[in-house]
Image 1: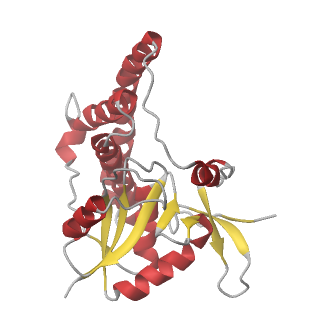
Image 2 (image 1 turned 60 degrees about the horizontal axis):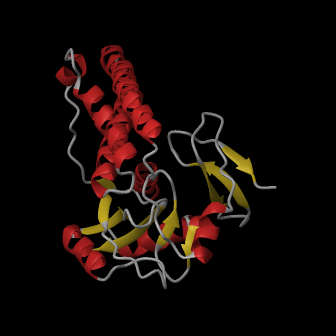
Image 3 (image 1 turned 30 degrees about the horizontal axis):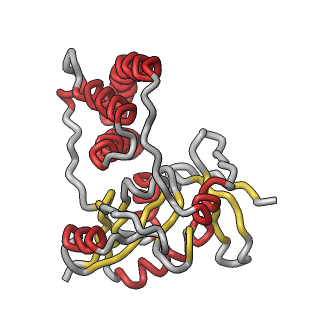
Length: 258
């Protein structure tokens, strides 16, 4: 029987993910969470949940307990399996490494797409940025952003894992082309964003209970030397708290918490 860890998010709770486990179909589990309006205690929001990433593991109970302990410093409330992050994809890849699991995903990168005159990368970046302008909390907007983020991480990972000079050349080129095409798409979408701002159209605001909103906003963000967001971690031997990069193990930056 397969066992899974899932990283899920809901447009009703921006900046928060649920880290949970199941030995059943993850889609069924997401439907259960949505039907139960799972979320912060007392919020009474009509929530819809969707798995950002699914990680197959040998023992989901043990893996979930380890991850909940590892991310305890960013846990929103002990009453729920909810954690604060602006980078759910990064958390998923880190979690995969920590529990020695396997992310269940289809590799959608095709070399030809990166060389097309009007690249799908540019189109995807434009769609994601434009969608964020019109409807920042829509679940389809999150899908577009996650798709682009996932694609970018995998181009970087392919280059880093290449064992031959030819592999480095091919995947290094893909990495560069991805960034170029992404910049083209975002530049076009920025024009749309500026136009919308000029019209004075207000963006939707999520209503989260004030006591939990304070927990999410009072923390000052910390970033590693490469510009990635840092997360609080605990040294298992000394029990000391420290900052660690959210892109671990790709980035092993750390800093003591004063």
